[in-house]
Length: 89
Image 1 (cartoon, rainbow, N blue to C red):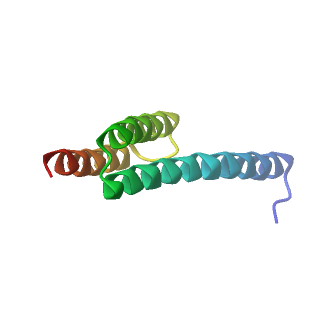
Image 2 (cartoon, rainbow, N blue to C red; image 1 turned 90 degrees about the vertical axis):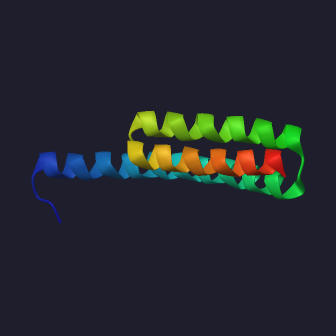
């Protein structure tokens, strides 16, 4: 356990950030799941809206620094590939 005041403060701050990041990641996963379920259902309008929401959420989370920028790009790319495959099918 930390003994100095600054170390104790750092522990409190990191706990707050951990909880905040956890909620952001949960929101991101929920949006991706909604998109995937819309793709499986085959509804194009719902899929497009879910895609837009998921990409927006992922990019905002990336800009906050919760996930790495390369992970943002990879996730958005994979969603776009699924979106294009669903449109063509």
